[in-house]
Image (cartoon, rainbow over all chains, first blue to last red; front, top):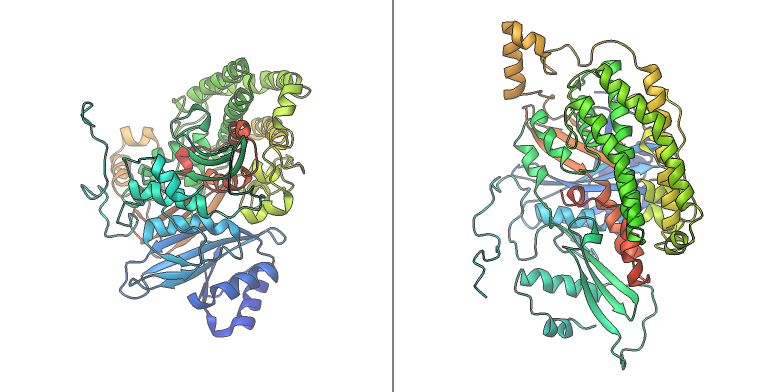
Length: 170
Length: 430
């Protein structure tokens, strides 16, 4: 399928493919949004390039996807907005089910701090060099990753400590 | 303060690991503020837990503040007390079934949330929405914006010390509830938008009540301005308090009025117009100061702009259908359901399976909710349930900013700054 890119997005894609070559795996469009999948080990270089050369100064969100496949199960998506060109682009990296790890982009966009914690909390994807990688919604005592597909909708009984309902006990 | 000192004093009985890591991260937090000598002979240093059950935290927000006397040296936020896992729930519901949950995300402006979900689903499934429905949605969204900003205004002024003002703004919010009641049949969690349009057309009564509100509300706004714009107490509580500097604003990920108060006119209604925002005229108010007062001005002006948009919508409101007439994409009208076999079947199919976007399709669509950029990312697997639905909640982004702008402020200003940030925990905690 041929891409229908705006001028600014075309420039972004060209610049990325020229600078990083093989590190850019795939560029595709879906419902009018542009997604660029890149190698996970190049994410920091690509982030810096996007921010400094292509003016994607605003990181709006980072989120995870559980693809539920045997290889490269988890996907981390960066939602970037360029205020100058008013264009939005999504950068995707994938990581394996065993010990999923991605380099944190907090050094490039400090706003990635909490969204990356959320990805860690919900999917168990660890971010290397994250300044404060703790769970964000679930308590630290919780051992599961709720947005993974194998986690049941009703939760796991006994997985979370609940307060005693009898008023007299200490 | 050292972690061991805190743990010797606080004997946590609940989620011990969680408390430990929270205090540890407070200790580890690097701030640019100058630290006094470690000796602390006057024992002015303490760690203060504020919330989660605190009336001024606007929900269940917990702040752990490390104080030096009355100054906040550093602070950490603990959220998740209202975590309901709506993204997990969404994966097990049809798109239409999930909509009432969005009402309960940002419960101060349910209409914007409904519209945000519906526009995202319409984008991924290529549903055409009739003109009239677009304008009705815009009216609803702008009413929701006014309603949300009114609550913010009331509580923020209350946090600054004026209790009675809260009643004033609630008087106006009450009118919006009545308008919503006439539009949608619900006062609070409206669920009025539908995929492919809206649930029902505006009745004459609803039109009348919107017009009446639009005519009377500017006078009330003028009164608010009269009370606050030259109010010395209000100024001294808000001026140069909770400053988010322009150079930090983009990097910190602030959105909505918080970002616009710091000098960036980023408004999704202008950046990527949805509904019919490209056909109405409005300004995006911005300020440069980045303090709480700037946010006050931005939100007040936004209310003026909302009234302006509603007036234009009422003038432009075309006649026509309010929901797309395609039984594979949207609910058929009730007339069809009650009087024809096909209508009945289609209604059942919509409830049972719902709309099915193409397999593997992905989309992100964001709207400008009262709190900022509210976006829905949807990934479809070809069934009626989303494979992944991610909500980009503006309050979540703004709370992250709050964690940094609180450092170095006075402890008495905490509640004012939280008020100025205007977080809704239902949305931030998902």
